[in-house]
Image 1 (tube, rainbow, N blue to C red):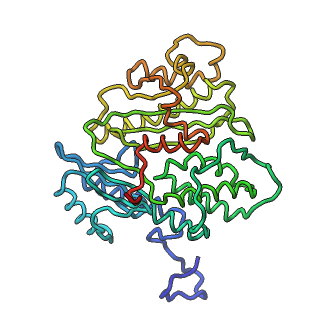
Image 2 (image 1 turned 180 degrees about the horizontal axis):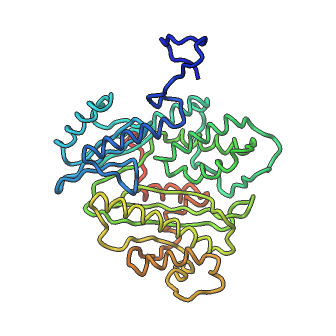
Image 3 (image 1 turned 90 degrees about the vertical axis):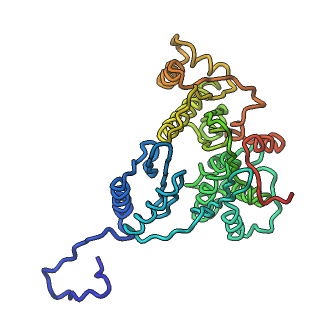
Length: 388
């Protein structure tokens, strides 16, 4: 350990040691120590830490609600109690050194734009910086983030590419996917080759960047609706990975007609049938709906009717409703009982949806540009910077 500047200790004196009084930047325990200190202060001021999201703190006064969410040392405060927000700001200013940046416009690289139609979240500056850094600011745009019927797999060619640069690019794309569900599947595919990327994998990453060039300002639109109905869409391909023949599952979840969460991820095991792949994906979708239900309940908006999870596989829906154990469902027995329990408690419903109306299709496979852009319109993904 190096002595801090201004310390008058000399190395000749053998029995002197340094006592650490604060967890400083650079130490492994500093984030935990800081968050513990912040949590203690918030609870002392009367706020409750959310069980659904530990970085969310809530305070309720009758029908008034104040919510604070923190990421390291960046804080967002919202709610319908202006007086409480001013008191909280004054309290935090006394406890910590902080600055009020006014209305939320920019947070962790996410831009917040407001209009009469609602709130739009995008990462336009982040995309433009990424394109400038990679030298693709003047490239020819691509119409979709990944080509149809791609054959990306491990060891598909022997020509390696720069591993560190590839990992850095994919890492930045993963962060960008927080407001860009349109690239979720493509990023999920290229992130599978982080340990040994090839030129073909790098070309796939460059295609994602060329797609971003076509509309860097695309983002999520949140409109005010009368209800807070929770709806999900879940889908899965079957044995789509050429490397290990595992399936990819994905889901979209909506609250009040607004897209709030999504995921595209390769499954951990090989599925023996398309129904099994869909069923495993359905279990992930149910877990996400339960988490949203728990979060809404803490906010005071508990769903009053069963949440809907749309699936386009009738066999998977039949397995969920059928109380009889079959040999072909033994290996998914835990998922089967888990989903069946939520159906019996009327927490969720599993309505059938036609494949052409399945929004989660773009999270499990590469589709043509027509289907792709139809899905983006239905998901509420738009570009507020596009010329009208």
